[in-house]
Image (tube, rainbow, N blue to C red):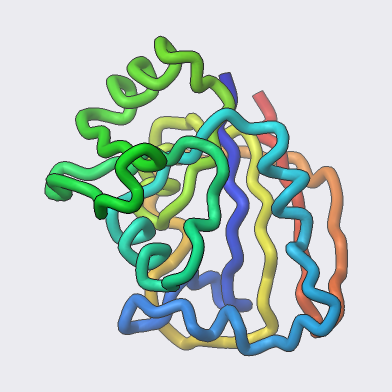
Length: 177
C-alpha cells in the first residue's frame, strides 16, 4: 500500500491563490509541452483520491477528462458526479482509514492523493509515502497552503531534484520510517 502526492506550489508554498484559483500555474511558458514527469508518475498507480474542491477545479478546466485511472472523490457533501464522468469518478466518504480500507479491499493500493485538505488529512495520519513537489517561481502572498498543522514532525528523505525550463524545480521526497 502506498499513497503519493504530485503537486505544484508557489515559492511561498500555496497550491491555490486567495480565491482558490490555480490560473497562476500557467504563468510559466511550456514551449516543449512537458508534463513534468506526470505520465511516468501515473504509470505506477492504481487510482486517484482527491477532495471535492480539487474535483470541482479539475471539472472547471473543461475539455477531455485528464485521468485514465479511476478517480475517487472524498467528500461528505457531494451527492453526484456529472453524467459524462459516471464510469470514471466515484464519490467516497468516511474517515481516512475507512476510505483507504474500502479502496484497498477493491484492489486500489497505490494511490495518488490530491487536494490540499486531502493531502493534509493524510499527512496528519502519517499516510503519505512520497511527495513530488514542483515549485513554480511565483510568490502568491496568500492562498491555500499545501501543508497544515501536524500532530508531530514527519521526516522525509530527499531522493532527487529536477530543474525544468522556466525556472520550475521539482523535488522528490520519500517518507523515512
